[in-house]
Image (tube, rainbow, N blue to C red; front, side, top):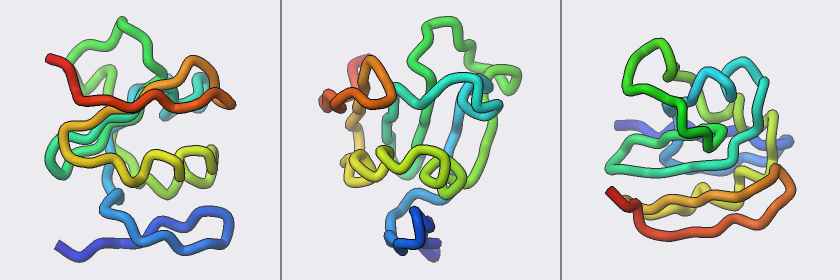
Length: 102
């Protein structure tokens, strides 16, 4: 797989984030990203709400560069390792990192 760099405020950052899953609230720019996780090569960005189902009605696929353009603070979590998550309580808040809990 070829890694496509994500453009963040005119800065090229080569990360393994290209395709990602986003909740519909984030996709529509109704809510900020408050939760990020990485499982294998899959990245998920969500508003942190609990009302998301495991269906295509609640989750969409988009290129991560669009999220980075919208919210440059997401650069702080592009180095998440496999099986890790990060969450915050507000868009300007600090990220709390940890292992994904089942």
